[in-house]
Image 1 (spheres, rainbow, N blue to C red):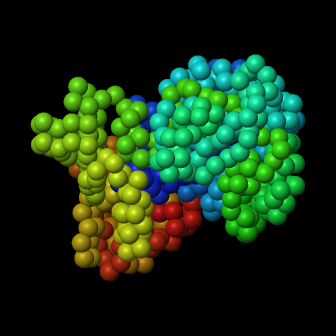
Image 2 (image 1 turned 180 degrees about the horizontal axis):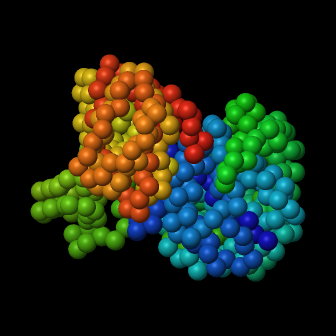
Image 3 (image 1 turned 120 degrees about the vertical axis):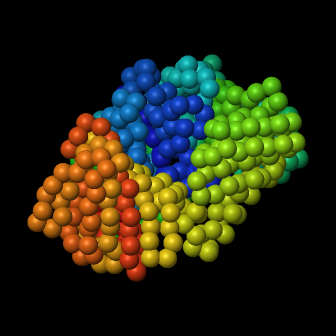
Length: 474
């Protein structure tokens, strides 16, 4: 049995301002109508002898993972929640331990959640080709046949072929090269891009991890043993996982093991690690442009232009990336988009919310959009899904006015319970316990006007929450 493991822990800072820490690129529809996470899961449908995927993600993203997979008809048996990021080796370790605990010694197919693969049939065929090697105890890494002297990827040098499947011994792993070295790798024909995709038996990987990084394996085992199951989620123990050494699967195991082999893969792969990479994989018009949203372009060429919330117009530009969101605009040379992450670093250093949060914040019950904010007041547009509700809560520093725009609201305010319909409103004083529920069949949309001395999202005293959230999650 093949158990796919989808790693969904990345932050995608190089695709700012669209991708942000609270809503990173794997949850965005960057190439087609599906998000990157959904496409990763969907390409597994039809893979022979495989189960539904395990997913490892940041605990703050758990509801997005569950909802996005549910929307495409995929139900993971377990979503493993990381309280802190510890890179890919611990993530794979807890997945392997959980897969073994569920029975047997399955083959694990490790997949990042944020990659593009154009040739899905070719990808599935390559996976099936390496099954015999994986069953025999090999640790397979999928090496991408390079199409350019890319300096942004690590490389794998292939050795002698093991059989007629295409699988080769691994001569060495090499770091990201300079341009001249990358060209020499391309010319040689025996170097492949390191894709971050792997396949191996759970027991073989864990045995190698115990030999090469025993402290890591012990911490992961303790985090799993001391964790708790809640609904569809498996919460790792925070203290144990926080103490786990932080390392990638390449550094911790693959570069040190004697069991590594590489399977060359030419399936239209791209890790979409920058805006220029997204331009390369997208459908361009006759001027070489990719235009998303409300865009008007005149005499503009070879550019990526994304209008998220308003009209964006360009005149006489070339080789640019222009990305507009409700609270930020990026204009960058297509050749320098790798440096976008420095903007994110500056935003975080200055504690600006644009570095990690969008104006629209998704919650398990729906979303809210902060449409205006100033001294002592904030205006939000709030949407509550049918049958959903916010937590029962109160605030020490702010009062709230609710105006129903569409749908029906059930309001609990102190000891009162009443219904509001379109164009009706109510007032929640400071310090009063309250809850908003959508009892109807259509989305409930309200306008909330907050007023008070402090309007931060951490001013929440939560009494009851059906989603099991803490106050810091809003």
